Image (cartoon, rainbow, N blue to C red; front, side):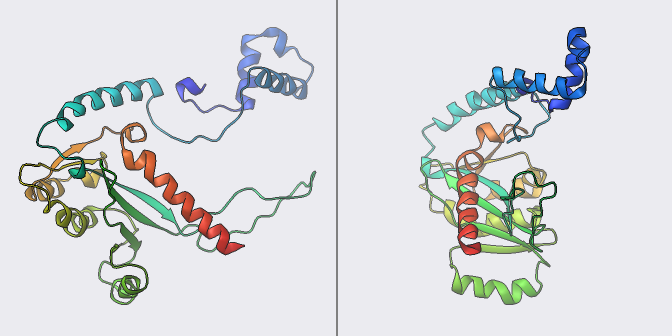
Length: 265
């Protein structure tokens, strides 16, 4: 069912096979049917896998929409007033405080497998990552859960700046989400200082996904005020069209996961 992106299980395959084949339905018991299904999957090199991407559209429909958008945008990027240093993409991604695993090593045949979890399993921050077509990375922007001008902002952020880096910007939001205020802070602290260095003949262009706060009038107006053109990537197409989503977020999380693993050991 992968071509249609429909969720499927071995049990559902068994039910469908019973409807399609009276011979299969006449097998003596559920175990025999299940073994037959598993042989079928093995023979056709099919496996039961965890989904890596979720969408409300069929893959073929998403691919067609993404290709149409790319073909529309490409001539715009080839215009003489563009520069790869000022073709910009920003995307935010959740950063969990712990990278827990569902699996562990246990004795073969054990019926109950215990797995401890962290008290921080549900906690997370949001990272806004910004890159250019030339490969430059603008200062990261981290959003933590907290009051916009509360204790974390007043007492913790100054420590972050001294101990971690002065080239990272921080903010707080009630749910650690990117909202209208957080986007405007990103524009003021990350985007505006960078694009003000653009040569006079260059019109910077920014690609954002169709997330609600990216499309607010206040956000669009502020970005255009600093001389940046904005283009929105169609919903559901970011995993095909958005550079940060495709090539940056996953490696960043993998490195964080590796660092936590080493710390745990």
